[in-house]
Image (cartoon, rainbow, N blue to C red; front, side, top):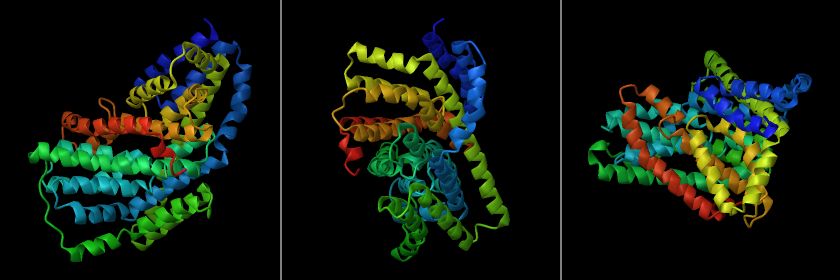
Length: 436
């Protein structure tokens, strides 16, 4: 068996391990080690590599931004910011048809601007919004589908942990990627609002009506979200204005969110320890995935599969847009069986060289940014695509009284909106790069 054939066989083996519930980091690490041995025929290079790889991979200064953003999200959840975001959105939208669900999407977008994680956004906002949606007579499927889709805004609206990883893998500017993601993220949020508006008119029985909030109560609810706005502009604005590096901005954002949580009474000695513990656990998981991907991608380099694949695709004479569409479709399939972070660290070293070798009529930097936003968007579709959408499972676990089939049915319009948005961003790259 040739080295290229060994590289090809590694993918079904890896997918099988994932289906067997082997942690994705361990699956990539084991497959990479065994695959490297099969290609080279000896253990010495693998042992020499493992001696330094963990340090060289995880000691990257740019990766320090990840635990800081995760900690900022933990502090934001403890500080009641998710509740204040939902209250403010509900005060202005709740009395409209489908308004409470729209408020949940708006709150997800706001929380995503200081969280950076899809799963964390979905889980946090579900705790806040699910009781209100049920109390106002919303159908279980619509409620859970709304929160699952809204959770994806956690990494679509900057700052985004997954975009940080993409920036490191593709050697791109983190600040420019954040800026490029802003407009597509807003479009995603607006498209979800439109889906809800259409859904509740087609199925009027799926949504109840909340009482209209007087203006005297709306203003205080709006004022209560000032910490979220301040932290977002301090972090993201500080990066764009050149006040801080992305890592410094993440540290300042985490400190600001922690201060707000302490002032609001949501942070004491125990909860502070819990925040650090959850951050450490999530960071360890992410870094282990990165380590596993590094070993697996090193094996692929030894097998020469990426180089041979790029040469083969180029030799076929496919139009660049055809290749891009095929890759995006593959991402949708991959997204159904693994989380977006694992998928990106696994596939970017393979797909990125293929597409960068083609002419898309733009500068290399603009193409890399546009491709990154497309990958991010398509990866998140997988998070809400049946049968194995991780966001769907998270929300369903928190709403055990709602049959999973109801969530599957209600999520279809949101997935349709996502696909239409991908078509829009693919057809008009300027939407992603005009701010860069």
